[in-house]
Amino acid sequence: AAFNYFTASLALILTAFTTAQGQNHHDKHAFHSPKLYDYIVVGGGAAGMPLAYTLAEDGDAHVLVLERGGRREENQETTTIEGWGTGLLNNDITEEVITMEGVVSHLGRVLSGGTALSAGVYIEEEPRYFDALRTEGADLDQGLVDDAYVWVREQVATPMDFAEPYGSAWAKSNEEVGYSPLVGTRAQLIEGSWNTLSLFLNDDGVMASTRERLASDVLAQGMLSKRKNVPRRSDPPLGASPLSRA
Image (cartoon, rainbow, N blue to C red):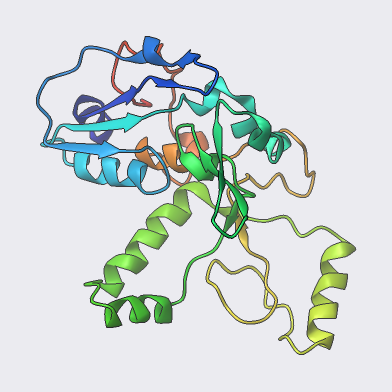
């Protein structure tokens, strides 16, 4: 029932944009949607997608997500670990940004934003980070923050493979210069050496180049942690229906 509610209440439009060369992208995906929405979320990245799902979760609100890029499925660099790094060279899914200090960075131009292009390392901030935000006036409930972390972690994060012999040598080197011994797999940011979580699926040490990348669009689809047990259907062409995975 939850998936049916979501299908009815969350729509996605991949909006048209023009590159420096004047080529229009994705305007073919725009479709005729209801004229009135309770919420319009601009940007389908790390914040926009889970926010849209949360707003639409109970089925009572109509939510529209506006994203200037296309789906990840249209760009293979964003779907597996093999595409990590090379995707930054694809101007259809990235935008190069140079800061005033001369630092070169990239913005995502694809559904899921930077989570579709990054190295996929998943780390949760420690409570003192949010304590610092509260001193600046932020009204944050730590209990809700912790619940949100669990929700995200269960859907997109898996333990990162521990490559040997490199992993053990790296942990030993850290210990020799004063860091704590390797403490195992942790999602939280801690001092010392630990094995973090990853947006790339763990394939039990095979380290195949075809390992799937999970990104924030998974959160908007409301998938569960045991993703293989959730029936899925192929997405219809955009422009025909709201974003959903049944």
